[in-house]
Amino acid sequence: MKKNILILLCLGILLALPNRAISDCADFENATGWYAPDEKTIIYYSQNKPIAKIVLQECMVNSSSYIRLPKTYVCDSDHLLIDGVDCAILFLTIASSGSVP
Image (tube, rainbow, N blue to C red; front, side, top):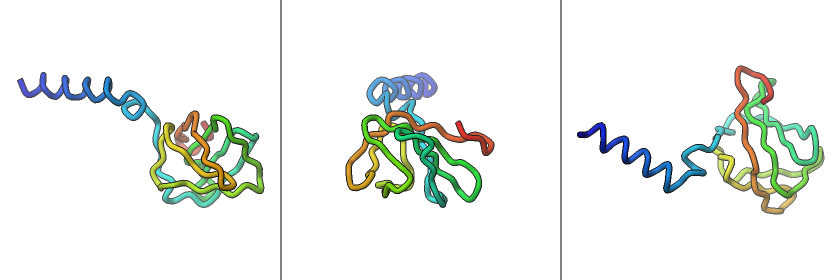
């Protein structure tokens, strides 16, 4: 009976909050830098290893942009500030085994 309640609870969370339940999230606490390979993409690094790739929805970024994350744990449904403008994250992909996603 407890197992059925747990399954129903998880299903309810998935249906109520689909973006949060299946979104990619990354911890940027140890981020030491970032690189913008194009005007819609940011790759964050910790030392030499990539942490995650962020694709922006409408904003543009360049090598001289000032980027501020509102928190250290960011998901693909969150926002960040680029040159003082609030920007939505379209996709956030976590780097696996030190390779850029």
